Image 1 (spheres, rainbow, N blue to C red):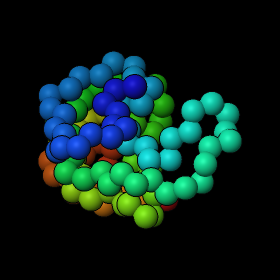
Image 2 (cartoon, rainbow, N blue to C red; image 1 turned 30 degrees about the vertical axis):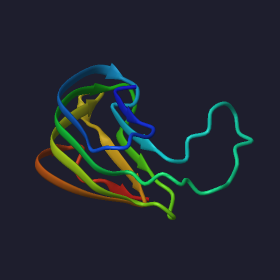
Image 3 (cartoon, one colour; image 1 turned 90 degrees about the vertical axis):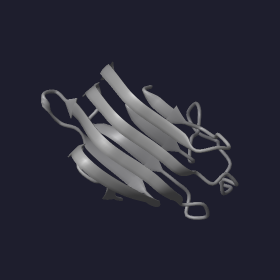
Length: 116
């Protein structure tokens, strides 16, 4: 993984990061389930907010390079994406968001998150 957030009790800033062939360049996952299942279906009590990703460049080994997967009970807010350039097989990578509000500025590759 590149920059991955599980939980942290203060604002996080990731700046000037270069990645080469990283499986998950940027990921926040409140629905994480290790192994092959049997995970509880309870809502996460952790709220994720005030995260900045700035000047992150490189290549991903997966088509989705930015993944924000949040529970409805604690949606992300205050995520800033500033000057990202991540590619997959010489093409712009993709982004996927579930219950995540974000703000983008500057170069965005992948483009803003697709809400799924």
